[in-house]
Length: 177
Image (tube, rainbow, N blue to C red):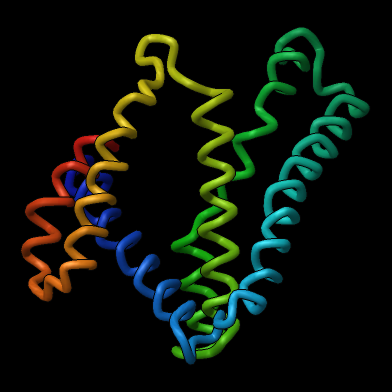
């Protein structure tokens, strides 16, 4: 079940999110020209810095209320600042679609903001909160770059079959990640 959800369903979910953002950035899309994408990207700063500020405020309130009585270590908890930066794209997208309906420009704005926010948050988590037993191996990202290069080459060659992309570039990127 863990593999099915994390490695299969999430791939399709992020694929759908990438499709939505790509369509929004194409000519005629809600985020085209690129000037229209600047606001959600700048708003991403709030999506990263806001949760960090809330985290430290909540920690300060707890400290002033005497919550750190020896059973909780303030210094250790303080190191958790990066965890709240990774928001939930799926929840944000689902709520926005329910509120605004399909095709509303706010959906694409929020989706780009959420994806950029998650990318920064996941980067923070990967750098500052790695598993010492399984350290990050950035050399594998070379396979992701190779998969992207293969997909780009297929696109330049005007390959129309999605199977070529899935069976050539896909395994490279999947293995790298």
